[in-house]
Length: 399
Ligand SMILES: *Cc1c(COP(=O)(O)O)cnc(C)c1O
Image (cartoon, rainbow, N blue to C red; front, side, top):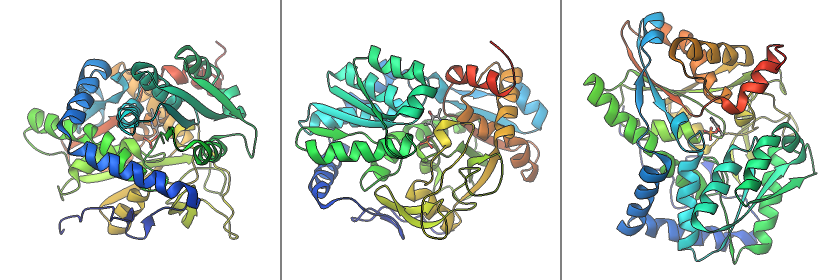
Protein backbone atom coordinates (compact mmCIF):
# COMPACT_ATOMS: atom_id res chain seq x y z
CA UNK A 1 0.00 0.00 0.00
CA UNK A 2 1.27 3.48 -0.85
CA UNK A 3 2.07 5.94 1.94
CA UNK A 4 -0.99 7.55 3.47
CA UNK A 5 -1.13 11.24 2.46
CA UNK A 6 -1.13 13.91 5.14
CA UNK A 7 -4.67 14.95 6.00
CA UNK A 8 -6.63 17.08 6.44
CA UNK A 9 -5.91 19.64 3.74
CA UNK A 10 -5.94 23.38 4.50
CA UNK A 11 -9.74 23.39 4.33
CA UNK A 12 -9.93 20.61 6.90
CA UNK A 13 -10.96 17.96 4.40
CA UNK A 14 -10.21 14.27 4.67
CA UNK A 15 -11.08 13.47 1.07
CA UNK A 16 -14.80 14.24 0.80
CA UNK A 17 -15.24 14.29 4.59
CA UNK A 18 -14.74 16.95 7.26
CA UNK A 19 -14.69 20.62 6.35
CA UNK A 20 -16.63 23.35 8.13
CA UNK A 21 -20.40 23.73 8.17
CA UNK A 22 -20.94 26.45 10.75
CA UNK A 23 -22.46 29.95 10.98
CA UNK A 24 -20.37 32.62 9.28
CA UNK A 25 -19.71 34.30 12.65
CA UNK A 26 -17.64 31.31 13.82
CA UNK A 27 -15.20 31.23 10.90
CA UNK A 28 -12.80 33.85 12.38
CA UNK A 29 -12.76 31.96 15.71
CA UNK A 30 -12.01 28.66 13.97
CA UNK A 31 -9.24 30.35 11.98
CA UNK A 32 -7.82 31.74 15.21
CA UNK A 33 -7.81 28.23 16.74
CA UNK A 34 -6.03 26.88 13.64
CA UNK A 35 -3.33 29.55 13.85
CA UNK A 36 -2.79 29.16 17.61
CA UNK A 37 -2.74 25.39 17.31
CA UNK A 38 -0.22 25.41 14.44
CA UNK A 39 2.05 27.73 16.45
CA UNK A 40 1.69 25.57 19.59
CA UNK A 41 2.64 22.44 17.65
CA UNK A 42 6.09 23.85 16.88
CA UNK A 43 6.56 25.72 20.17
CA UNK A 44 8.91 23.74 22.46
CA UNK A 45 7.54 25.55 25.54
CA UNK A 46 3.94 24.48 24.79
CA UNK A 47 4.98 20.91 24.08
CA UNK A 48 7.09 20.77 27.26
CA UNK A 49 4.20 22.03 29.38
CA UNK A 50 1.79 19.52 27.80
CA UNK A 51 4.31 16.74 28.38
CA UNK A 52 4.77 17.80 31.99
CA UNK A 53 1.00 17.69 32.63
CA UNK A 54 0.57 14.36 30.85
CA UNK A 55 3.34 12.73 32.89
CA UNK A 56 3.07 14.39 36.32
CA UNK A 57 -0.70 14.92 36.40
CA UNK A 58 -2.40 12.37 34.13
CA UNK A 59 0.13 9.64 34.95
CA UNK A 60 1.41 8.92 31.43
CA UNK A 61 2.77 6.86 29.89
CA UNK A 62 -0.07 4.45 30.59
CA UNK A 63 1.09 0.82 30.75
CA UNK A 64 0.72 -1.71 27.96
CA UNK A 65 -0.39 -4.74 29.98
CA UNK A 66 -0.12 -8.32 28.69
CA UNK A 67 -3.54 -9.91 29.15
CA UNK A 68 -2.10 -13.28 30.14
CA UNK A 69 -5.21 -15.31 30.88
CA UNK A 70 -7.22 -13.74 28.05
CA UNK A 71 -4.32 -14.55 25.72
CA UNK A 72 -4.44 -18.20 26.77
CA UNK A 73 -8.18 -18.31 26.16
CA UNK A 74 -8.02 -16.70 22.73
CA UNK A 75 -4.70 -18.34 21.72
CA UNK A 76 -3.33 -14.96 20.62
CA UNK A 77 -1.00 -12.49 22.32
CA UNK A 78 -3.33 -9.79 23.63
CA UNK A 79 -1.94 -6.49 24.95
CA UNK A 80 -4.09 -3.89 26.69
CA UNK A 81 -3.35 -0.18 26.34
CA UNK A 82 -4.41 1.10 29.74
CA UNK A 83 -6.15 4.45 29.22
CA UNK A 84 -8.37 3.37 32.12
CA UNK A 85 -5.44 4.31 34.34
CA UNK A 86 -5.40 7.97 33.26
CA UNK A 87 -6.42 10.50 35.91
CA UNK A 88 -10.24 10.84 35.70
CA UNK A 89 -10.47 7.29 34.34
CA UNK A 90 -10.37 7.60 30.56
CA UNK A 91 -8.49 8.97 27.56
CA UNK A 92 -10.60 12.17 27.36
CA UNK A 93 -8.23 14.04 29.68
CA UNK A 94 -5.45 13.91 27.03
CA UNK A 95 -7.47 16.17 24.74
CA UNK A 96 -9.08 18.30 27.47
CA UNK A 97 -5.68 19.28 28.88
CA UNK A 98 -4.22 20.00 25.43
CA UNK A 99 -7.11 22.28 24.51
CA UNK A 100 -7.17 23.94 27.95
CA UNK A 101 -3.50 24.85 27.48
CA UNK A 102 -4.39 26.16 24.03
CA UNK A 103 -7.12 28.31 25.63
CA UNK A 104 -4.43 30.07 27.71
CA UNK A 105 -2.42 30.59 24.56
CA UNK A 106 -5.44 32.11 22.84
CA UNK A 107 -5.58 34.60 25.71
CA UNK A 108 -9.09 33.42 26.61
CA UNK A 109 -10.37 32.88 30.15
CA UNK A 110 -13.58 30.99 29.62
CA UNK A 111 -14.18 27.46 28.37
CA UNK A 112 -17.39 25.78 27.25
CA UNK A 113 -17.92 22.11 26.44
CA UNK A 114 -20.69 19.66 25.61
CA UNK A 115 -21.04 16.33 27.33
CA UNK A 116 -23.19 13.23 26.90
CA UNK A 117 -22.49 10.77 29.67
CA UNK A 118 -20.41 13.39 31.45
CA UNK A 119 -16.94 11.91 30.81
CA UNK A 120 -15.75 14.76 28.60
CA UNK A 121 -17.45 17.24 30.91
CA UNK A 122 -15.55 15.88 33.91
CA UNK A 123 -12.25 15.85 31.98
CA UNK A 124 -12.78 19.46 30.86
CA UNK A 125 -13.86 20.58 34.35
CA UNK A 126 -10.70 18.94 35.71
CA UNK A 127 -8.40 20.65 33.21
CA UNK A 128 -10.07 24.02 33.85
CA UNK A 129 -9.75 23.69 37.64
CA UNK A 130 -6.08 22.83 37.21
CA UNK A 131 -5.35 25.79 34.94
CA UNK A 132 -7.66 28.35 36.55
CA UNK A 133 -10.12 28.67 33.66
CA UNK A 134 -13.81 29.45 34.04
CA UNK A 135 -15.86 26.50 32.73
CA UNK A 136 -19.44 25.90 31.65
CA UNK A 137 -20.64 22.49 30.42
CA UNK A 138 -23.84 21.95 28.42
CA UNK A 139 -25.62 18.67 29.05
CA UNK A 140 -29.05 17.40 28.00
CA UNK A 141 -31.38 17.16 31.00
CA UNK A 142 -32.15 13.56 30.09
CA UNK A 143 -28.42 12.77 30.31
CA UNK A 144 -28.19 14.74 33.58
CA UNK A 145 -30.83 12.51 35.07
CA UNK A 146 -29.07 9.34 33.89
CA UNK A 147 -25.60 10.52 34.94
CA UNK A 148 -26.25 12.42 38.16
CA UNK A 149 -22.90 11.50 39.80
CA UNK A 150 -20.96 13.07 36.91
CA UNK A 151 -23.05 16.24 37.16
CA UNK A 152 -22.08 16.49 40.82
CA UNK A 153 -18.42 15.75 40.01
CA UNK A 154 -18.31 18.65 37.58
CA UNK A 155 -19.84 20.94 40.20
CA UNK A 156 -17.29 19.79 42.79
CA UNK A 157 -14.62 20.81 40.28
CA UNK A 158 -16.06 24.31 40.15
CA UNK A 159 -17.81 23.98 36.79
CA UNK A 160 -21.25 25.33 35.97
CA UNK A 161 -23.47 22.66 34.39
CA UNK A 162 -26.28 23.98 32.20
CA UNK A 163 -29.16 21.62 31.43
CA UNK A 164 -30.41 21.58 27.82
CA UNK A 165 -34.17 21.15 27.40
CA UNK A 166 -34.39 21.17 23.59
CA UNK A 167 -34.81 18.23 21.20
CA UNK A 168 -34.23 14.83 22.74
CA UNK A 169 -32.40 16.53 25.65
CA UNK A 170 -29.21 14.54 24.91
CA UNK A 171 -25.71 14.98 23.45
CA UNK A 172 -26.57 16.45 20.03
CA UNK A 173 -28.75 19.08 21.71
CA UNK A 174 -25.91 19.92 24.10
CA UNK A 175 -23.59 20.44 21.09
CA UNK A 176 -26.12 22.81 19.48
CA UNK A 177 -26.40 24.82 22.71
CA UNK A 178 -22.60 25.02 23.11
CA UNK A 179 -22.27 26.28 19.52
CA UNK A 180 -24.91 28.92 20.26
CA UNK A 181 -22.96 30.07 23.33
CA UNK A 182 -19.75 30.20 21.29
CA UNK A 183 -21.29 32.40 18.61
CA UNK A 184 -22.28 34.90 21.32
CA UNK A 185 -19.13 34.82 23.45
CA UNK A 186 -16.43 34.02 20.94
CA UNK A 187 -14.09 36.87 21.96
CA UNK A 188 -13.33 35.48 25.45
CA UNK A 189 -14.39 31.83 25.09
CA UNK A 190 -12.86 28.64 23.67
CA UNK A 191 -15.06 25.63 22.88
CA UNK A 192 -13.40 22.33 23.84
CA UNK A 193 -15.01 19.62 21.70
CA UNK A 194 -14.63 16.16 23.22
CA UNK A 195 -14.06 13.89 20.22
CA UNK A 196 -12.39 13.88 16.81
CA UNK A 197 -15.36 15.51 15.12
CA UNK A 198 -17.01 18.86 14.43
CA UNK A 199 -15.69 21.63 12.17
CA UNK A 200 -12.01 21.97 11.20
CA UNK A 201 -9.61 22.06 13.07
CA UNK A 202 -11.22 19.86 15.77
CA UNK A 203 -10.92 16.46 14.05
CA UNK A 204 -7.22 17.12 13.38
CA UNK A 205 -6.44 18.74 16.72
CA UNK A 206 -8.21 16.13 18.87
CA UNK A 207 -6.53 13.36 16.84
CA UNK A 208 -3.14 14.90 17.50
CA UNK A 209 -3.74 15.29 21.24
CA UNK A 210 -4.93 11.66 21.44
CA UNK A 211 -2.13 10.28 19.28
CA UNK A 212 -0.01 10.01 22.41
CA UNK A 213 -1.92 6.73 22.92
CA UNK A 214 -0.64 5.21 19.69
CA UNK A 215 2.89 6.63 19.96
CA UNK A 216 3.30 5.04 23.38
CA UNK A 217 1.61 1.78 22.36
CA UNK A 218 3.78 1.42 19.25
CA UNK A 219 7.01 1.87 21.21
CA UNK A 220 5.76 -0.37 24.04
CA UNK A 221 4.71 -3.26 21.81
CA UNK A 222 7.98 -3.07 19.85
CA UNK A 223 9.86 -3.22 23.13
CA UNK A 224 7.79 -6.10 24.54
CA UNK A 225 7.34 -8.24 21.42
CA UNK A 226 10.16 -7.07 19.19
CA UNK A 227 7.65 -6.58 16.40
CA UNK A 228 4.60 -4.52 15.41
CA UNK A 229 1.17 -5.97 16.20
CA UNK A 230 -0.94 -7.84 13.66
CA UNK A 231 -3.90 -5.69 14.68
CA UNK A 232 -4.93 -2.68 16.78
CA UNK A 233 -8.50 -2.64 18.09
CA UNK A 234 -10.50 0.24 19.62
CA UNK A 235 -14.13 1.24 20.14
CA UNK A 236 -15.43 4.16 18.06
CA UNK A 237 -17.88 6.75 19.31
CA UNK A 238 -16.90 10.06 17.78
CA UNK A 239 -13.61 8.32 17.15
CA UNK A 240 -10.98 9.99 19.34
CA UNK A 241 -9.55 7.04 21.27
CA UNK A 242 -9.49 4.94 18.09
CA UNK A 243 -7.82 7.55 15.88
CA UNK A 244 -5.38 8.28 18.72
CA UNK A 245 -4.36 4.62 18.76
CA UNK A 246 -4.44 4.14 14.96
CA UNK A 247 -2.69 7.25 13.75
CA UNK A 248 0.93 6.39 14.59
CA UNK A 249 0.41 3.00 12.85
CA UNK A 250 -1.12 4.37 9.61
CA UNK A 251 2.00 3.82 7.54
CA UNK A 252 2.67 0.37 9.01
CA UNK A 253 0.79 -1.32 6.20
CA UNK A 254 0.84 -4.78 7.81
CA UNK A 255 -0.91 -3.62 10.98
CA UNK A 256 -4.68 -4.06 10.69
CA UNK A 257 -6.63 -1.20 12.26
CA UNK A 258 -10.03 -2.29 13.52
CA UNK A 259 -12.67 0.08 14.91
CA UNK A 260 -15.69 -1.23 16.77
CA UNK A 261 -19.00 0.63 16.62
CA UNK A 262 -22.02 0.21 18.88
CA UNK A 263 -24.28 -2.46 17.38
CA UNK A 264 -26.96 -1.80 19.99
CA UNK A 265 -29.83 -4.27 20.10
CA UNK A 266 -30.71 -4.65 16.43
CA UNK A 267 -29.92 -3.68 12.85
CA UNK A 268 -32.89 -1.35 12.24
CA UNK A 269 -32.38 2.42 12.15
CA UNK A 270 -32.69 3.69 15.70
CA UNK A 271 -31.55 0.47 17.32
CA UNK A 272 -27.79 1.06 17.10
CA UNK A 273 -25.03 3.61 16.49
CA UNK A 274 -23.15 1.78 13.70
CA UNK A 275 -22.68 4.65 11.27
CA UNK A 276 -20.81 2.50 8.75
CA UNK A 277 -23.52 -0.12 8.85
CA UNK A 278 -26.69 1.81 8.16
CA UNK A 279 -25.45 5.41 7.81
CA UNK A 280 -24.80 7.43 4.65
CA UNK A 281 -22.97 10.57 3.54
CA UNK A 282 -24.36 13.71 5.16
CA UNK A 283 -23.66 16.91 7.06
CA UNK A 284 -24.11 17.01 10.82
CA UNK A 285 -22.91 19.38 13.53
CA UNK A 286 -20.26 21.21 11.57
CA UNK A 287 -18.77 18.48 9.37
CA UNK A 288 -19.56 16.02 6.61
CA UNK A 289 -19.22 12.32 7.34
CA UNK A 290 -21.32 9.19 7.63
CA UNK A 291 -24.58 9.99 9.39
CA UNK A 292 -27.43 7.80 10.59
CA UNK A 293 -30.33 9.47 8.80
CA UNK A 294 -33.59 8.55 7.16
CA UNK A 295 -34.44 8.84 3.46
CA UNK A 296 -35.32 12.53 3.91
CA UNK A 297 -31.91 13.29 5.45
CA UNK A 298 -33.40 13.62 8.96
CA UNK A 299 -30.90 12.47 11.59
CA UNK A 300 -32.40 9.53 13.46
CA UNK A 301 -32.17 8.52 17.11
CA UNK A 302 -29.50 6.03 18.10
CA UNK A 303 -29.22 3.40 20.78
CA UNK A 304 -26.31 1.89 22.64
CA UNK A 305 -25.79 0.41 26.05
CA UNK A 306 -22.84 2.81 26.34
CA UNK A 307 -23.55 6.54 26.30
CA UNK A 308 -20.08 7.31 24.92
CA UNK A 309 -20.72 5.44 21.65
CA UNK A 310 -24.29 6.68 21.22
CA UNK A 311 -23.89 9.35 18.51
CA UNK A 312 -25.38 9.62 15.01
CA UNK A 313 -22.15 10.54 13.20
CA UNK A 314 -18.46 9.64 13.26
CA UNK A 315 -15.19 11.56 12.96
CA UNK A 316 -14.38 12.34 9.29
CA UNK A 317 -10.92 10.75 9.34
CA UNK A 318 -12.48 7.36 10.11
CA UNK A 319 -14.79 7.75 7.11
CA UNK A 320 -11.77 8.55 4.94
CA UNK A 321 -9.67 5.65 6.29
CA UNK A 322 -12.54 3.26 5.72
CA UNK A 323 -13.04 4.41 2.10
CA UNK A 324 -9.30 3.93 1.49
CA UNK A 325 -9.44 0.47 2.98
CA UNK A 326 -6.78 1.40 5.53
CA UNK A 327 -9.02 0.81 8.55
CA UNK A 328 -11.90 -1.63 8.94
CA UNK A 329 -14.97 -1.31 11.13
CA UNK A 330 -17.31 -3.79 12.69
CA UNK A 331 -20.01 -3.69 15.28
CA UNK A 332 -20.45 -5.18 18.73
CA UNK A 333 -23.96 -5.54 20.13
CA UNK A 334 -25.04 -4.49 23.62
CA UNK A 335 -24.90 -8.17 24.61
CA UNK A 336 -21.36 -8.56 23.24
CA UNK A 337 -20.27 -5.48 25.18
CA UNK A 338 -21.66 -6.94 28.40
CA UNK A 339 -19.86 -10.20 27.61
CA UNK A 340 -16.72 -8.12 27.10
CA UNK A 341 -17.05 -6.64 30.59
CA UNK A 342 -17.14 -10.14 32.09
CA UNK A 343 -14.34 -11.44 29.89
CA UNK A 344 -11.92 -8.74 31.00
CA UNK A 345 -13.09 -8.56 34.62
CA UNK A 346 -12.92 -12.32 35.24
CA UNK A 347 -9.73 -13.03 33.33
CA UNK A 348 -7.65 -9.92 34.00
CA UNK A 349 -9.09 -8.19 37.05
CA UNK A 350 -9.97 -5.09 35.02
CA UNK A 351 -13.54 -3.77 34.81
CA UNK A 352 -13.64 -1.80 31.54
CA UNK A 353 -15.97 1.06 30.65
CA UNK A 354 -18.98 -0.18 28.65
CA UNK A 355 -17.55 1.70 25.63
CA UNK A 356 -14.20 -0.12 25.85
CA UNK A 357 -16.04 -3.41 26.46
CA UNK A 358 -17.24 -3.29 22.84
CA UNK A 359 -13.62 -3.72 21.70
CA UNK A 360 -13.11 -6.58 24.16
CA UNK A 361 -16.39 -8.37 23.48
CA UNK A 362 -15.74 -8.66 19.76
CA UNK A 363 -12.16 -9.98 20.18
CA UNK A 364 -13.18 -13.65 19.90
CA UNK A 365 -14.58 -12.81 16.41
CA UNK A 366 -11.63 -10.65 15.42
CA UNK A 367 -8.94 -13.20 16.28
CA UNK A 368 -10.70 -15.86 14.22
CA UNK A 369 -9.01 -14.56 11.07
CA UNK A 370 -5.64 -13.81 12.69
CA UNK A 371 -2.87 -16.43 12.84
CA UNK A 372 -2.21 -18.37 16.06
CA UNK A 373 -0.02 -16.35 18.42
CA UNK A 374 -0.87 -13.12 16.55
CA UNK A 375 -0.06 -9.96 18.50
CA UNK A 376 -3.09 -7.75 19.17
CA UNK A 377 -3.21 -4.35 20.90
CA UNK A 378 -6.59 -3.42 22.38
CA UNK A 379 -7.32 0.03 23.74
CA UNK A 380 -9.04 0.01 27.13
CA UNK A 381 -10.29 3.56 26.68
CA UNK A 382 -11.70 3.88 30.20
CA UNK A 383 -12.46 2.15 33.48
CA UNK A 384 -15.85 0.75 34.31
CA UNK A 385 -16.51 2.23 37.74
CA UNK A 386 -18.91 4.75 36.20
CA UNK A 387 -20.93 1.89 34.68
CA UNK A 388 -21.19 -0.55 37.56
CA UNK A 389 -24.73 0.48 38.57
CA UNK A 390 -25.88 0.39 34.93
CA UNK A 391 -24.36 -3.06 34.35
CA UNK A 392 -26.14 -4.34 37.46
CA UNK A 393 -29.43 -2.86 36.23
CA UNK A 394 -29.01 -4.40 32.75
CA UNK A 395 -28.31 -7.79 34.28
CA UNK A 396 -31.27 -7.55 36.63
CA UNK A 397 -29.13 -7.35 39.75
CA UNK A 398 -30.51 -5.15 42.54
CA UNK A 399 -27.77 -3.20 44.34
C1 LIG B 1 -16.22 9.09 25.42
C2 LIG B 1 -15.68 7.72 25.50
C3 LIG B 1 -15.52 6.91 24.36
C4 LIG B 1 -16.01 7.32 22.99
O1 LIG B 1 -15.40 8.45 22.47
P1 LIG B 1 -14.31 8.39 21.31
O2 LIG B 1 -14.13 9.79 20.93
O3 LIG B 1 -14.85 7.54 20.22
O4 LIG B 1 -13.09 7.80 21.91
C5 LIG B 1 -14.94 5.67 24.50
N1 LIG B 1 -14.53 5.21 25.70
C6 LIG B 1 -14.66 5.95 26.82
C7 LIG B 1 -14.21 5.37 28.11
C8 LIG B 1 -15.24 7.22 26.77
O5 LIG B 1 -15.38 7.94 27.89
